[in-house]
Image (cartoon, rainbow, N blue to C red):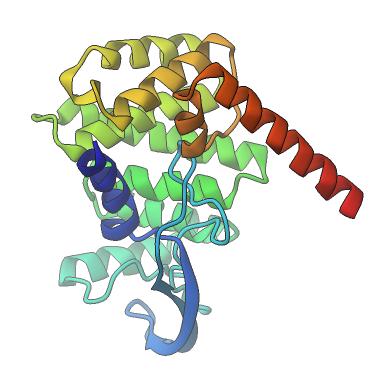
Length: 258
């Protein structure tokens, strides 16, 4: 169970680099597209925090790692050492009207657009738009667009997947989560129901997530929820009642303190 959960966390928060971070350094770098040199802040990895069902960190760090952004052309430096093909395609795209129109959008939204143009794998594109949804969730229309794009690419990945590895498990959970968050409770419930009897989701925390998601779909709940909610869901009724009472008291105390 812990191995599965560790894989879920590492896949998104190490390889895809949206890990919770506290320490920040400043470095001078050069944009590979237009050559502009600029200073940028970079996050340093720190111990993991808890996360929501859409994998957004909660606690002191509430967003993805910073991506350097060129102040002149707006290119998002998603990695160092671009290949010749990547550089040529990036230059052409950054100079396009489509990219210039997106300069007001979040860094991960633009990274997703760049990944689309570079024809990166669907799973990688999906994770960028998922992280964009964290950045833009204060704006309902942008949030919905980010979630739709992430859903599309996770679905594409699942359609093409040939084996049930960690990426497949993660994409399966994210597809259902995004359907639920978008208010499509019927399709979300059907999707999670199709997962609950699979061996990958039996007797482990991933299976607990599926069971909790089915509960949320049944009550037509489209709100964000945390992994801790899943842990609480597994507890005895009296334990859940105590947790609810404790949270109510903490909220009441916080309101009076203000």
